[in-house]
Length: 169
Image (cartoon, rainbow, N blue to C red; front, side, top):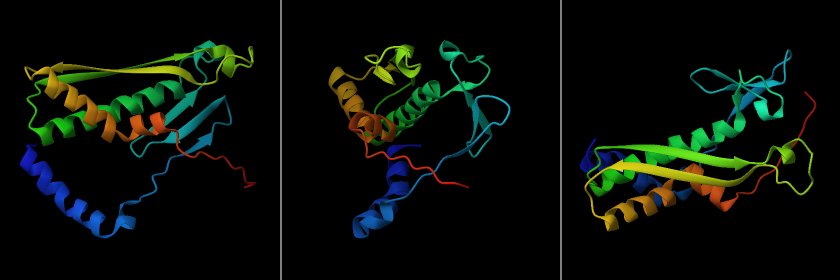
């Protein structure tokens, strides 16, 4: 897809959202069910069933997906798609790219071993390897816009309002 095709595809949506801002607000949903045989949660992905379980560092077998890995995978997926869309819109010459996310976890926190150990990632690093001959200023612009428009990156970065509720079925 080239810049013109992308702009033509998105133009009607952008106009609609300018005219009716409420139409741009969409609730995305995820759903899962607790496995009755093991410590796992079956997550409906729309394409297949993903079974998440304990990370081996917390007693898991390693056979199920780790939700921490899934978070990093979601970041990689979103950042990669965003990078490609931004590069297309900027007519940035990109022969290819790889995206990698790494995150540091102290499992003492999630296991309740040390109250001073954080639960969750203490740091996440997102790295892009680009096949390009573009000048550094264009690469910097590409990275800045990718960070700005990547939904998962911004969600992690800005800490949205978060709540949890429990209901009896």
